[in-house]
Length: 134
Image (tube, rainbow, N blue to C red; front, side, top):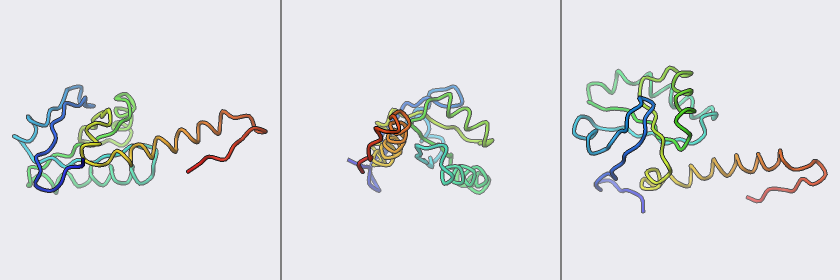
């Protein structure tokens, strides 16, 4: 069941690209959290979104708002993305349970499904290629 406006935010303990374990119960005491969920770091849209969030940090500062980007990607991939895009906010590794609490599991699973289908197509012999079901 997804979180609705006015509901208490689900707690989390997520590994961060800052090499710390972030806990919601500690974070919400200090600042408001802006959560951005993504699955496919190679997507042009995700990269544009992350860049826009990074450029907008100064605008969020007076609101005491902290950006946290959440993804099921491995932490080393998130660190590489953070360095490549020069992101000034933490990226958090999620095992999909936290994302699911916010109702975004379908988006995450959809991106993985597309990647698995593409990988399956690469592995099949040219004469044995089957059409992927959607």
